[in-house]
Amino acid sequence: MKNMLDYIKEFGHVSFEERAFSEIDALVLTELEYLPLEKVVPSDENGELFATVKDIAEYMKKHKKELFDENPMMMTEERHEVSQVIAEAPRYQALKFFGVVSEWDKDTTKQFAAITVEVEPSVRLVIFRGTDDTLIGWKEDFLMTYSPLVAAQTDAKEYLAKQASLWGGDLMISGHSKGGNLAIYAAATQAEDVQLRIVDIFCFDSPGLYRSVLETKGYQNIVPLAMRYIPQDSLVGLMLESEVPYVIVKSNATGAMQHSAMTWEIEDGQFIKMEKLTKNSQLNDQTFKKWTESVSDEELELFWNVFFELLFSVGIDTVNDLYGQFMHYVQEFLKAAGDMDEEKRELLTRIALLLVSTRFEVWKDSLDMSELVQFEMPELKLPTWDELMTTLSWKKNGFEVHYRATEENEEIRAYYQQRHEQKKHEEK
Image (cartoon, rainbow, N blue to C red; front, side):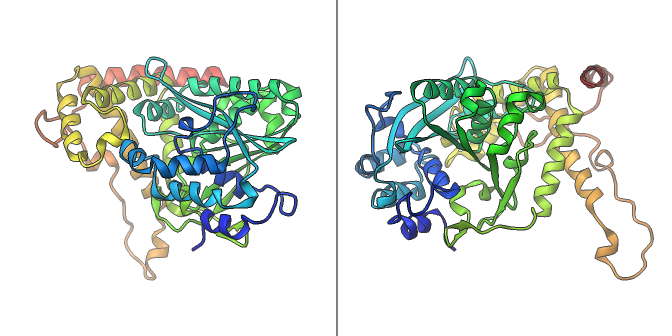
């Protein structure tokens, strides 16, 4: 099946005057931004110093092996091929890449990267990178489940505002995964005169925003300018809240692998569209939303802090650390969990089990026995999660997990539940 590489080969000889810049062109450039462009593209914000697709291709080809060894998650074979094919396409050879930024900060839990591309003399595209290989970047993603603002969103707002102040033409904004979240947030928080210059916002399998942001005038202003593109088995693209409409794109992968835009199918220069999401995607969406609604923001913050504290404590700093050592780190994680403070362990276990039990209950509620059998059966009552798993406990030197709801733990649970209900009442 054809993907963005085939699109470049098929339409790479056609100029933007003959075939207008499209969402697939935005996807191609957004995928390219996952490469370490900070190594070759100037940071000059004005665009006086810039790199071309040929500059990028030459650098990636020359340093291919070391870049693969350095970061196999980001520098994939497919992305490297994109960098080589696009350099041979006349459609993209006049593009100017500049203003590159790539930062991460463990203290503020921030992972942020962006770049600006001059598509035409009167049009520029600002691209925000999605989550990279750093554990800090992944932690920041999960902070979005309870926080109305994360550090990368602040940086995205400032980056877009700076680009708008340095240049007076039309703006397009794009991002994949967290990058799309940053694109929407940055656009929603600009002054109205900047928003009037935004012509398109492309969000590729990107999570929404914290619910309070959707109520702002700035967000409502930019919703008509935006479009989401999600695969049929999407998970990330349905997280959090959004009023931006979406197009369902066919992917040749399964499950979580559909998050990779390299698997999205394209025919005749357009995405192959699907009519509906898979049942699995719908159930995962229901699970995530029910889980976050049933846990207070305060508890979610504590849960993610404890979870990533454990990951950092066993020596994991990047996703690349897990390559070839996954089971080793699983063992270390469980040992560290067994040694940690009892209250933290209780919180981690309880909230994690709540997620699993919510998924079980959502799946159970979705079953339609009448579709499974064509003859009358006695009424079946599936067990609840608590009936299936009443005890679970941590074992310091193994994989066995054991949890028991003590009176003290129940008091902790009741406290957070009361706080959660009070917060919901205040929001109403």
